[in-house]
Length: 237
Ligand code: SF4
Ligand code: SF4
Image 1: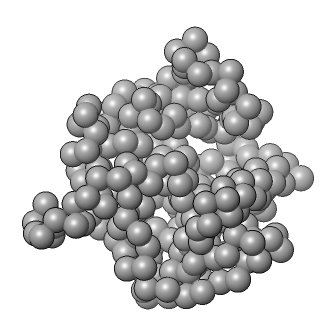
Image 2: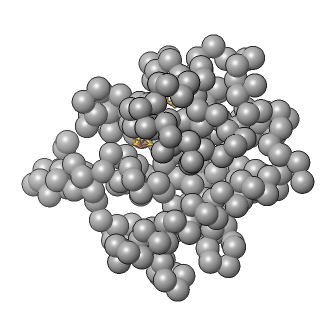
């Protein structure tokens, strides 16, 4: 099986481009970042990765990206273990100079990753839980657009069709999530991958994989979003 190549990147960039939401979620979350930047565009919080072929494409065609060198990262030794061998760390020139057509696949996906269940099926979108306290979208899953869900699913089906080890990476990520959520006695939140005019939400048992369909209101809010939610006029904030 081949790996992610230049032609795959072109296809993905053309077909996976819808915003995550009809709302500008960056304007929402940046209000809580002391640097007034959307958290996923701030390398103090999130470091974008690019496939090596993607980096080749971006470095030839866009002038907004550069590689991040190891000595720029304080905790590089710890981070290094998490970076797949066919990917590199990159950083852009900042959210005010973002060129949407050259956003990396990690930018387009954040905060979601394809969740792989115990049987090895890609069943939907779950999120990088370490950003629960910062990412507005994680706390407002009702604002995710169905079009984004569909493009996300097509993009990752395409990636998995061309890269076995990328499927293995996300399977591993899903196993880690089950371990972490199992220890915390929490259900795993999931947006179903299957097409529907409205998103369908599930809670999954990390122990036995049992899925329960739920309303979006059943997901707890986190960090500042939890505090704001408890204010009497939260909708006006
Ligand atoms: S995806 Fe999350 S962190 Fe990124 S801009 Fe939207 S709310 Fe902020
Ligand atoms: S390319 Fe755009 S979306 Fe990605 S990190 Fe930079 S500013 Fe954010």
